[in-house]
View 1 (tube, chains in turn cyan, blue):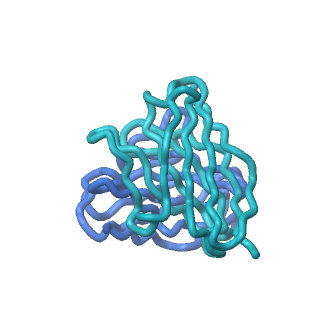
View 2 (view 1 turned 90 degrees about the vertical axis):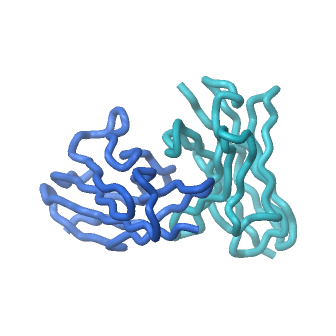
Length: 117
Length: 107
């Protein structure tokens, strides 16, 4: 059974970068297509990007193009999401998520990222 | 990009009621539509995938229907544990979009 365990909460200053990790257990990372979704306080879910297995590339939501980088370390089965040039509006819970097809049936527990001066 | 219009944004119903939430896509997405339940402080949970398929372990009172641009999510008999926010989510052309969410409360 797949489990996703994320890194702990972060507090960052505006303009800084944050890197959130997502450790996979029960499967290897190469068997999964990992995606990242965020949720600002009191707001809805927002897809940031993820791996497209059909062409073997990571795709990003247009909103985050140029500011987000998603990487994987297959030696440790850990996925990473790095967001740069942070601003207060980036304060949110960040989730990694995966699943078969185009649905996300496995989610990490979430990582709270707070951007504050 | 495809826009998803989910309605209503909030809903109050009584235990045992039939509850319906709709999601409309700005263009044809075939059946690439999923439904999630999210309780406060928790990650979302997949309930329905590919518009009408019940995820394993999800109670049969939950159902989904639709294709193309118009989709419906139904709880046939509302239970107290169904209090949550529900989201639709679509996939099209390498992009995923969530609906705005429907907050469901007990009357």
